[in-house]
Image 1 (cartoon, rainbow, N blue to C red):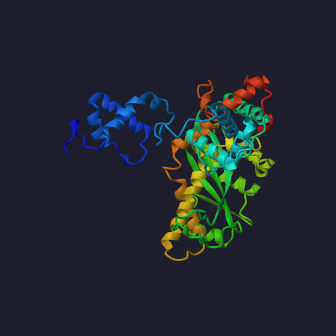
Image 2 (image 1 turned 180 degrees about the vertical axis):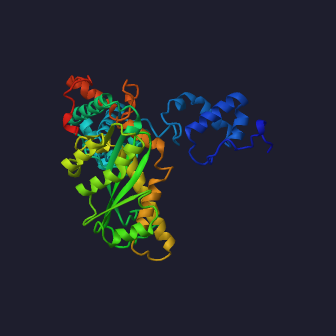
Image 3 (image 1 turned 135 degrees about the vertical axis):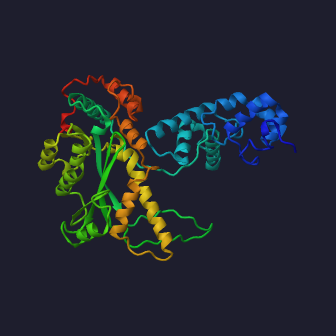
Length: 444
């Protein structure tokens, strides 16, 4: 067959096999091409029948109204609903509960359907489930595995959130903390020495699926991560189990060139963060950052209310170096802490990938993960510029409401902005940032 005009070969404009459902975006491209070059040429270029092109053109308006044109969906998902009004209410029930984060099952949809349509209670259960499956198909709903388990926030939490954000704005103005690099977020996160995935590719029909480990699933270390609003990553601080000046730390310092350059090491009897560890981290990483990059300007350090952050020694050490610590309200770090929102998960995913690849490369049962190996993994994961880059870090400070412009022009970037506005309107709260009653409990 001869090629078309503009050097377009037959079927070259359609990357999707014609036997599969074609995305709406491709259909719209084909419609536009047909309007310029005719149905026959469009059919050749997109490797479909001419009647298909005509059908698409007749349904152009419906395709344009689809929310996500990249989805491979069709306009007709079976017969029209038997109970259109009931289905509309059922869909409202679904949307309302998913916005609240509630789990919706086919069983809960069946129950709600019977609440809305009690005269169908005597129908066979299979018939009702069939109606629900048809409803799900018409509204492009499917059963999904959860990717995140979150704790529901009480309504008063949004009032607390507003006061916390107002505190940050006031502190930034009072202390002339205008540049993003003057805003830090720190968090301790556990790292397990064995990080096997709970999924693997296996033959269909096999009943027993085994994933071997090194028996270190419950052994863990702690890692202190720190980022700044300008997208910078400060060196991680890793806590191992052992004596502070013992044999282990001496061997690590001798054999691993990245220590004290790209990573710092702490030791204690249970590999947890303690007051001593926190103060070592401040002296090793935070104070040098404040002196070298910030020229001793005042800095905001935003972190959670862990007991190790609340002691007087830490407070004094930070005050002496012009560092103002602001505590995130309890239970709200997953919304207000940049590291929790955007960084910790990709960081741990990278570590898990390295662990899995090390198991594969061993070509036999891998030995226990050594400290030197985990140190190199942490450095490589933290320095990764694809999964944890400058833009991701900058955005994490914006969507948590920390580094946004003070004039309010970037408030919409804050993920809780709409809910926060609802709370302000419903409770008639004062948004005046000059009000001195703003959340002083969260400042030290």
